[in-house]
Image 1 (cartoon, helix red, strand yellow):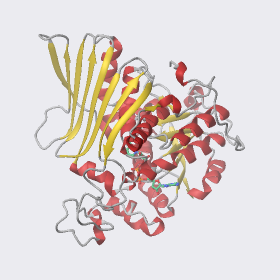
Image 2 (cartoon, helix red, strand yellow):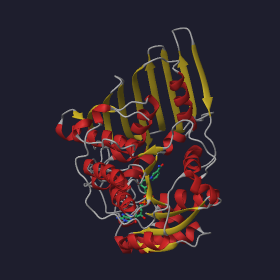
Image 3 (cartoon, protein in one colour):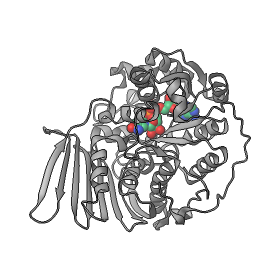
Image 4 (cartoon, helix red, strand yellow):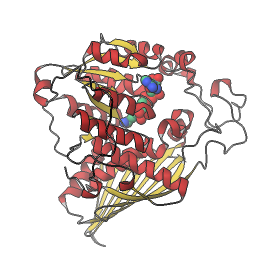
Length: 449
Ligand SMILES: NC(=O)c1ccc[n+]([C@@H]2O[C@H](COP(=O)([O-])OP(=O)(O)OC[C@H]3O[C@@H](n4cnc5c(N)ncnc54)[C@H](O)[C@@H]3O)[C@@H](O)[C@H]2O)c1
């Protein structure tokens, strides 16, 4: 993978904490082919207990065993173990994370906590001699990005980032077309991300609506999309400018409550949601809320919501490509519209994720070479979570026979660059100024992330 000179500079901050190589076993592909890879999961909420928990055990137990489960909420970690079934994993509270590593000796720590805490476990796992698999975003703040790079450099451990969006059928198709060169040099990319009133609102009911936990949807959600573009056009972001506001949710309403169950306005609120109708939601969140006070059915009109629901971001890349990215969260339908304008043609990709009208296939691709020649075709999603993407991420990590032909496995460098675009966009919104990525981060000189 290429390394861009402008981002190469001496590592500014070197981590000073003690390195305790509890697990010193080499984690190369030959070691996973002879015995099961042991994983410990920290953050046993929805993603941790399902995608990296129950589904991992269901589809990958030939290669993987879950040895430890850890969460800040002791009730949730016990429920997660029961929900996952088929595991003898030991359970731990967050304060005993080091003990879990010592007792269970995992090959990987899978980090699926609330976004802003990813860094703590990713860094600590590496300090304890263990590689980390972090859900996206790898980090929500500049300082966190630097800590991860520096720790990886110092410890020689590795971080993998769970960018499942690289693994959808449309992503692979776009990558192959762009890499073939048939569109020539890519001059600009237009990326519209739109969430419907159900999915969009769900972010503002949860911790995702507060920047201190999610880094804003420009980091939490858009890091997926920024990574996708970085990977597809194989270029590094140089400068970022953005506009954004909380234009629809948050304080944009005359009434509000603490959460839906205790609200006085259920009759007139379009976003009233009865969490008790779902057994899974009750077990995972409602029955655990006395421990941490977290309400999964929080109010979308909470005055403290500061994650922008409406934004537009411009990125300039080191190869000269421009990206225009927009994010909206209150549409009647959901999907993405991604266009690549090249010297020799244009590719338009539309994803019809959830529409009130019938759609034959959810992925539509149009390639136009000149004013007379246009080709349009559709693709379907594969079976499984996120159109089959989640299983492909896991297969690439855990099944030694799966090869990384499209360079889909993402490391810390990809994780950091995608988070930094979102963080820079946030800074640009706050200051009204353009932000240079190179001013935010120092990549260690001889390091390969
Ligand atoms: N790649 C994807 O498609 C995808 C999809 C969903 C979620 N995610 C990511 O997965 C992660 C988890 O999301 P989720 O939907 O499961 O959220 P969630 O709220 O259901 O789960 C988060 C869990 O982290 C725990 N936690 C919070 N702070 C902690 C701390 N300091 N130490 C230990 N545990 C802590 C919570 O108790 C909870 O169990 C997020 O980073 C999110 O971005 C990725």
